[in-house]
Amino acid sequence: MADIQNIVSSLRARLIVDKGIINKTHITTSENILKICYQLPQAERSNILDEIRGLAKYLGSINVGENQLDWFPYYQLYNVLCSIAYKITKPIDNEHTNDNLLGVSDIYKSQGFWLADRRNAEELATHLKLFFDLLPDKGKSFANGELKRSVTQGYSVYRSEVNANLLYVEELPIEAKRHLDNYITKSDLIENLSRGLGFNLKVCNIRVYRYFHSKLGQEILPHYDSVPPNVFKFMAFNGDIKIENGAFEILKDEPILRKDLRYLNSIKRRITKIFNPNAAATSPPLFSVKSTPLKVIESCIGINPFMIVNSNEKLHRALNPEIGLIRDTIEISFMPRLLDDPLVTVGGCQSGAPLNPFSFV
Image 1 (tube, one colour):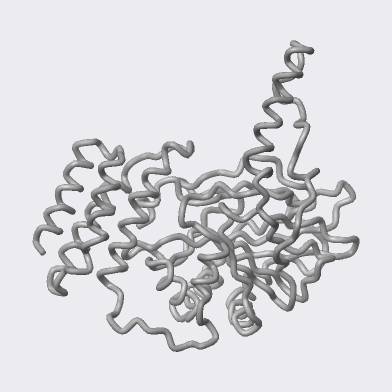
Image 2: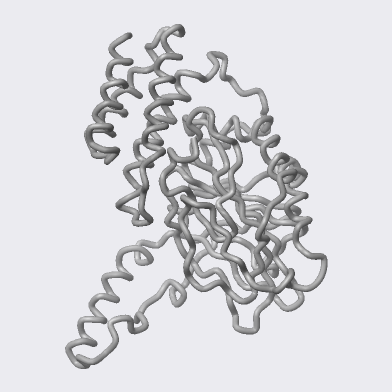
């Protein structure tokens, strides 16, 4: 099986020659390694991991821009390497014994989300208490009531306007992150997801926030996220969450919401331009997700409920809480874990995910 090690070494050498610019050939090579790496004798697996570790260290030094065309190839290669590392390091006896978790990863993969049962919700809530305790008991402001866009260097940045009825925790204490680290290490649910997805998991960001009622009707409108591939979220909520709290909801994915809306609005803009050449290029769309009737597939309600969701693929929203109600939320972004990278990192209260996944290995 020395050939596999030679292929990995050759891949690393070609990437160095190409100055870290990843192309389709590099990704195809890694995918071919994934198909045959299970054949490796145990004694040779550590050598492959060393090669991957060296490759990751080199690619981690590359400066990657915020444009999706810049970071997407890095995630493509990174995700395949994570699957290779998992495949050659996972225990031979990998049968799960927790009947409470049978099929969780299968359900998540098939429908794009999984609403936690009460037992798992209680377990996660125990580890998230320190995070929720950071939110104030009363009122809706910290020192100056203004959001500081704290962002870890190398992370994507959320630049859109923040709703006035939204309050973020800006700094997360190390004790709280250690609790989450402990949960990931021991959780049968995380192990089940890793087995089903084919890679180990780590947290690449945590956001803690509170939503208040707003007379302006500010809410999280139906949308899809634009996080990197294989990044998904745990949406966790504190207390007894009802529909009136503006519950997190998964919506039916109608084709018109993705393709036809863009087509109809492009026609509308062309017609407008013909009859009114001076019309603004960014005029309001004729059709929008907000104005389209939507069917709710699942609402995240109950006692300390949480949901695992593929937010890139599932249309989702959270309505404005009713008068006198709040919605305390923790949004945990998971991504594949390669080798020795930390289990929990935080990008900041307005960050998404690493631009270069190799930079945090």
